[in-house]
Amino acid sequence: AQKVTQAQTEISVVEKEDVTLDCVYETRDTTYYLFWYKQPPSGELVFLIRRNSFDEQNEISGRYSWNFQKSTSSFNFTITASQVVDSAVYFCALSGPGFSGGYNKLIFGAGTRLAVHP
Amino acid sequence: NAGVTQTPKFRILKIGQSMTLQCTQDMNHNYMYWYRQDPGMGLKLIYYSVGAGITDKGEVPNGYNVSRSTTEDFPLRLELAAPSQTSVYFCASSPRGPYEQYFGPGTRLTVT
Image (cartoon, rainbow over all chains, first blue to last red; front, side, top):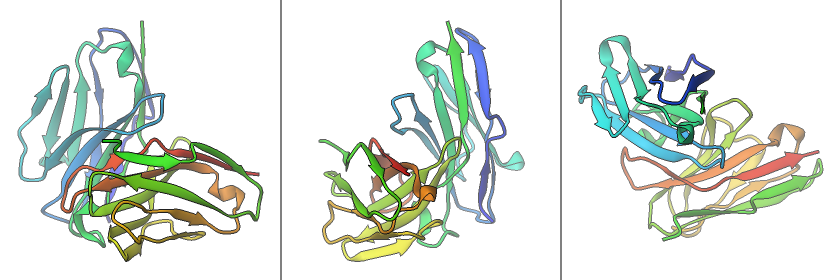
């Protein structure tokens, strides 16, 4: 079965702290894609990153970085020097060819609510 | 480009009423989707479409219907609304292939 687990329901940090959001996935597919989305208090979903299963290089984009480890089926997201504007719900999602309809169906985790306090 | 637009933003329905949630995208994407998001939960796929005239069920299709007569539009129909359909509904679109989906702003629906 395909599944995404975000065990951290809520995280609270003080501004400038680093914070890591965990994502663990399950899939039988050898080719699959992983995504992170941000949902700020305004409610829309904002795409952050897509990763395919053959690319295990870590990625850094400004204060954001992602650590993909196939050995532990994890795709963790770290925010360095957090800011109040980072307060949001963050979703990890999985897509793979084993899903009926192909790659385009996303399986979402339950999300992690991050609160960054001044 | 407006991206993905949804109307209405908010709606309150009485049990048994019907309504249509509208979704339009102007990015010429083949694929479109409807999700629902219940409080404290991730998104669950209701229906999706891979092109005009082609639709298929997602994880939670019961109580909903869709149609796709054009590339741009993908309306979601609720027949005989039930309290269990109280949720936030998101429409999304994507190009063909394993690409990210672009989401609309959502419709908050309450059934009482």
